[in-house]
Length: 344
Ligand code: NAD
Ligand code: UDP
Image 1 (cartoon, rainbow, N blue to C red):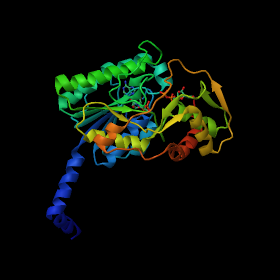
Image 2 (cartoon, rainbow, N blue to C red):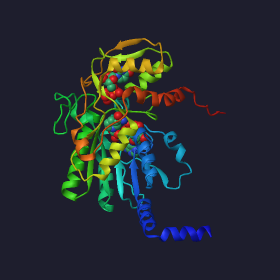
Image 3 (cartoon, rainbow, N blue to C red):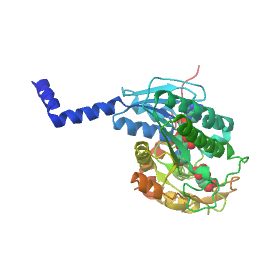
Image 4 (cartoon, rainbow, N blue to C red):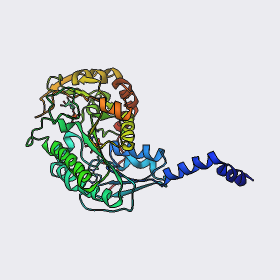
């Protein structure tokens, strides 16, 4: 009787359309490169929650399976360990999100050649796949395309100020090349592409040891260590909480816009003020100390999000101190030493 009731409900006209709509959602198969990383794993969660099935590809060079552990028994998720710089094909997909790349200055400083590779041949392999299956494509680009900007705040039509041979160039130029590649696949091969220029994002699953400012400050504060401000701390960044950022990606993925869109929180902070915010949120009595400023460290960064507001109706909601509070538990749990495997 219960089944008959369900069938009856399913065949009433409005229920039928709801069913059809859900079924369409369920058949959307999405490929996410960099799925074991910070942003890729949150995007995976968001797309699964929308009813999609997800194939996550990652070579684990900076990401971790820990970020996907909660999906172990999720039948709509499959993980493929693979380096996207080598061609691959895990079956037909309808949408591709290309998020694979080392992202923190420490990671791309260590993996310079790999970063150039993933932005060039890696991204090309993924675009070829999107072309083959006529899948839509969204690429994770970056505010680093603007380099050390002379225009403030940064609008998408600013071409940037990048040192092409400095230590950051492996990342900045890889991302600028990948933007050119994405536009070329759009223009010459008619791939339906999108470019998200992502500004500094933080939240749970941001690698605790990748040297980025939020992870460094949070981990230092929680351990009572000195907070290491580079330079005078007068340089600025604008920090976006991860759920806001992912909401921006989803909105952009549904939009027909092919030109770059800044996705970031426009609230600009000096690094010194950011250190003080971390001390307030953690209640830590750590001291602030000053270290030398890395070469080519951008002096200021703030997204102009007029295009995102207008095209996507998107606006971040979570301010820095709220976001830091929401991340506190994650950073605390990252302090717990992992159990050691016994060796003979
Ligand atoms: P992350 O290091 O946590 O994630 C990147 C993932 O890509 C990792 O899991 C890594 O193992 C994987 N990867 C790298 N090279 C690969 C390869 N050749 N093949 C397969 N997998 C590979 O970094 P994130 O912060 O999540 O960044 C994700 C994307 O967003 C990157 O493309 C990054 O450039 C971009 N982005 C991030 C930020 C930010 O603030 N988090 C800002 C701007 C742009
Ligand atoms: N920074 C800092 N102390 C740290 C780590 C970073 O003062 O322990 C500064 C860094 O010099 C830069 C800013 O914080 O000015 C943001 O650095 P991050 O590596 O997070 O990202 P970036 O925006 O430079 O890619």
